[in-house]
Image (cartoon, rainbow, N blue to C red):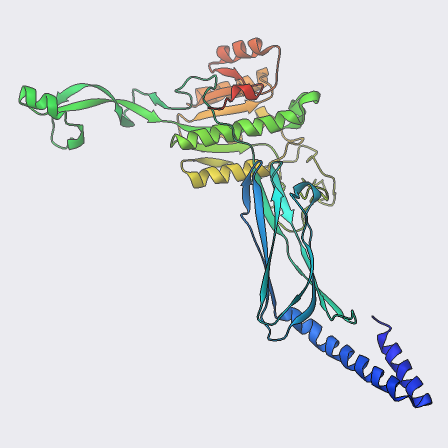
Amino acid sequence: MNDLPVLIIFLFLIAFLFQIDFIFYIGYVISGIFLWSRWYAPRSLRHLSVHRDFQNRAFLGEGVDITITVENKSRLPIPWLQLIESIPVELRDGPSLSKAITLNGRKSKIFKYKVRALRRGYYRLGPLQISAGDLFGFVENRAQLIEDYLTVYPQILPMTHLSVPSKLPFGILTSKHRIFEDPARPIGLRQYHSGDSLRHINWKVSAHVDTLLVKTLEPAISLETYIVLNLNSGEFSRQFRYDGPEWGIVVAASIANHLTKKKQAVGLATNGADPLLQENGNLVEVNKLYDEESGRLLVRNLGPDNGSNAVDAFVGKDSRLIPKPIQPAPGQLHLMKVLEQLARIEAGNSVGFSSWMPGACLGLNWGVTILAISPSGDERICRTLHQLVKTGFNPVLLIIEPYANFLEIKERARYFGFPAYHLTGRHKLKDP
């Protein structure tokens, strides 16, 4: 109340002119409350501790419980405290947080609300607006709890049937080169030699023939799988420009999850845009563009002069938002890294798949299976995959658009020396 000092002065003038003690009394009381509020309200915020706690990663469809803890560390109470949390409409699962309370000294209160992960993406929660003042509204001081961020992983569909051979990529490849021997694949027996592992001795047969015999095992190469996902929107047909990239991301996430469960190494490269990327390649959460309705992180077009605020595409075939490839590695923690990138990634007018893919495959080990997920399989893409065949890789082309001429694509792929498969809908990734 900016006019309150003027009102107090006016009251004292009236009391002085008319010598009315009661008005003097009212003026003293109001002055005391005002001065106390001016002194205490900002200090009360300094002794206020506010925390937002939640699981910052969720799978599609999951509910996320968010807890706001407010603690007054001062001995004095806070007469009036207002909390308003900024939650995007599309994330809400119930009433949003908007509270006005009195908080006694050395006390705390806990508030809970819930959001639901209905769409893959990277979301902003907050800020929490905090206002403190007196009961009369004479003084109000404001503060805020900064934003936190929620990652919603893409949908993962269990796979009991996928139209590719079980050895590609869900197994091992036999090899003439003795990279290692697979204990699950015995091919015969031989006499024991010094240095052989005792675990490979066939004790039953050895006892029968009265000499030590060792199992010989089939040599094999452990598969590393490298998922290469085409998210160049210019290569999707117009009617499939939204559903196509999303389906490709679901396929990539499902395959990565399946391979990790099989204890195999998996990696990821995509020519989509990571909205968290800065021009220097670092991941930065601040100064980003978020949708007001959903709170979802959007792609900010860097533009030729880095000054444009256009969204939903990184035009001009700009590669500055293309994330660095994730090299193949096993393990659940590595899978989470892959899923986090798939959660944020967006399709855009990127560099062409066939021209970008060779660079994305640099540094891979010999014999890696490359799963190329793409809406199309034109001759340029097939020739690029053929070059990967000649350099010792095992490419597999997965077409994700419902092409009527897939037989032509399949025949072209066969001619260039690699298999092609058609994954046009969720029926190809069946539940158990």
